Length: 329
Picture 1 (cartoon, rainbow, N blue to C red):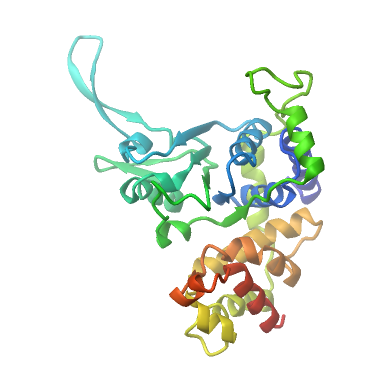
Picture 2 (tube, rainbow, N blue to C red):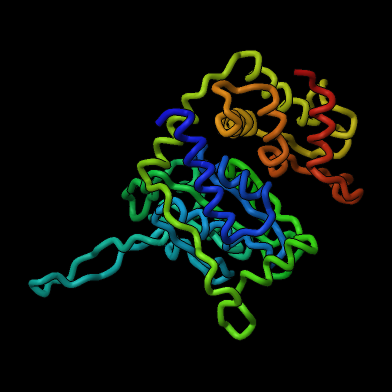
């Protein structure tokens, strides 16, 4: 696959997703970049904004095997990764067989991930980080590509468990869904399901499949082959260090309101998502503009606020803006 084919196919994917998702251009572009980079995305927004529908639309357009897990407090790790079960063979003998869990798919929707206990949340750590699952001492490879799209509600705290920093760090991007405006809300009502359960506009087509696993893997390989100049990578490194409150080059607000800055995965995320943005923009190399464009979704979940920052209502995005202003390309 060459860059022109990638851009053409990406445009077709975006068009198919647009048949279902109204507005939310930032989230759609972010999920597409994350997909091209072969990474995982954390989708955050109020209920009813289309987080689940967005993932389903991408799965339909890409023709990828997909699965969905509704996370609840009583969910166990084996419900995700799979477990050994007793089985009887043709001769009547009882044997132990492994039954794979829903994680063995290409596009996994982890719905309301923060409703599960930390023990169950951690069941995804190996899968997200290594692309493997270890059960009963046996390590099994997951399909390629393997991408997790997790959702969470940012305002509801009852019955939820905050995601640990180690798990947040495994998400390439954190994407936010914004409430729709007047025109977008009208379009949502016209094309969505009526309260009685019938389709309000049954003639509206759903997403059509325009790609398959082979095409997705080819796009991922092309993104990872985009060259990176050393001075652009150095800019990404300096930007990450500027968000570390212990670093001497950190802006004053970062030193005051941040508790921890991004890990090295933050710099990797900037360069990987930035290369996807460069290809989608018609360029064949990573540029400063790409780093700056993907900085908020790549770093907002990696900047941990101090108690003073939380008390003052400071957002990680505002600290990222300070770092972008302080670090010159």
